[in-house]
Structures are given as C-alpha cells and as structure tokens.
Image 1: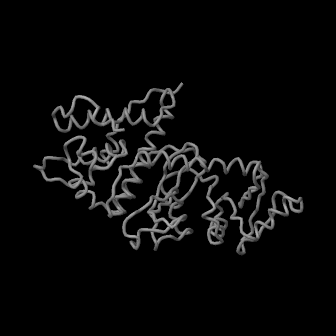
Image 2 (image 1 turned 90 degrees about the vertical axis):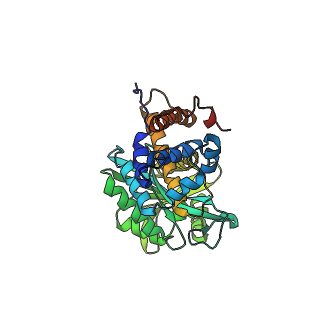
Image 3 (image 1 turned 30 degrees about the vertical axis):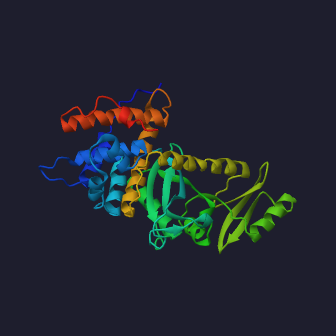
Length: 343
C-alpha cells in the first residue's frame, strides 16, 4: 500500500527565494515573490490576474525582480531541485522539442519559425518515461538550433547529476538527421526514432509491403550503419531507425512509450504562469517552474494512497501556500480559498 504524503511547497519556495533581492525594510520579502510565482503557476494565471484577485504584489513589482534572473541561474534551479530525484538504475529517456507560440517581434533572435507559418519560443526537453519526470530543458534559438550539440548538452547534464544509465533514448522524427545518428552511434547510445518517409525510405516501405525485403534490414545512413525496422499497423507501415537489435513488435511497443512525453507537455502547460513579457528568460523560468511542479505532482501520485489528479494536487498545494503566505505576513490575509478558484 502506498503511504500518505505530507505535502510541503517550502523546498521549491526556498530555492526560488534567492532569486529576489529585497531591502531590509521592504514591505514584501523574497519569499512573498517566490510564493507569488508558485501561486500563479498553480493557477495557470498571469501575474496581472493574480494581483487583481489578491490585491497585493503587483505584476510590475514581481517582473522588476525576475527580469534580473539569468538563464544560467534557472539552470542551477533545475539542478538543485532535481538532483534529489531517485531514478531507477536504468531509464528510458525521451527527448523532444516543444514550442510556445509567440506573437511579438518575429525577428527576435529567440524566436523560431514553426509549422503553419507561425512563430514560437522553442525548448528541447528531456523526460524519463517511467517514472514520468521532467529532467531538464533548454531554450533553443536561431543560433543554438544545433541538434547534435543540444542532445550532448542534455545527455552530459543527465550523467552529471544522476547515477542512472540511459538504457534507451527515444527521439521523434525531428532528430532524423545524419549528424544525430552518427553522434549517437559513435557514443554507443542506444536510440529509437521513426524514420522520415523520404523517397528512399518510401521505396523500401513499398518493397516491404510486397514481401521483397525483411522486417529488419541494415541501412547506410550518411556513412553510419544502422537498422531499419518495418512494422505493419492497421492503417500504415511504421518505419523505425535504431542501433539496437529489437524485433519489430518490441520496437513498436517501446516507441509508443515516447508518447508519454507528449502527455507530460500537456500537463506541464497547466503548471505555467502566463506572461506576455518580451524577456525570454522570464518565459524560460515559467517553463521550468511548470516542469518542477509537474514532478512534484508525479512524485505525489507515486507515494499517495491513490492516483491523485492534477487538479486535486493543485488544490492541496494552494491550501498549503495560503497557510505559508499568512505565516510570512503574520496576518490573516484571507479567510478562504475562494479567490483562488478561477474558472
């Protein structure tokens, strides 16, 4: 039976507190700002909305403080918060890009064009599949959009903080490049990704469907020898590229687990504080806090006596946050949580 868990938001608040420098006689202390960020993230609301709802700590005041936060400090926050994660000895790691639509200056170096002619702020994220946990994420801009380097940075960071071994790396077809495949093969990192169905791959798919090629074949991809695996689904033939020896059924079932990261993205989005600021480090901070709160929810589900839904987890944390906020201010700010329940 899973044990009951006593939730406490203090650890994350304590890590966020050093981000804010306040004078000795300031009305609001560093913890007030930390709690506001967490509160806004739990509500999935903007700082402006939370000020209107609560009547204290204006959005401008909070933004003035977090505009001083750098990307380097945000990375240190991730490292400090996640270093205590207890992972299995072997993990399956999923890496993917996620994009947040952007409606400001399209020529900003931090903005990248995406599908459909839209513009976005892009992040590359690593998550473990089981348990489903946010591990790390980097912002990707026009000058850092180098897939092999981004992968190495994520993988090096993983091995720096965890003793776990990456048993398998799951990638989406966006990483289907000769440079990425060569890099992973040379480093002996087992990977599995869907092959882009270009003309050469489609020719092999048709040959497989006619019974002219086996379900697993050797394939030269930019001078790197790998396996191509074909799996006949109900509506289409799936093609995977890998440097493993998995049979088609196992490869297909393993790759289906990669969709866990898509679920993670959707849930993490519910833990972001909204902002329209042009300061991209603030946007990065919002993204990271979402990932860290997502982890707190996942760990709570693993240790509680029942699978706690995210809305219930948020409600419990909001009650904890309200209690802590009132303790910090030494006064009864509000008698109920009604002001937090925003439709």
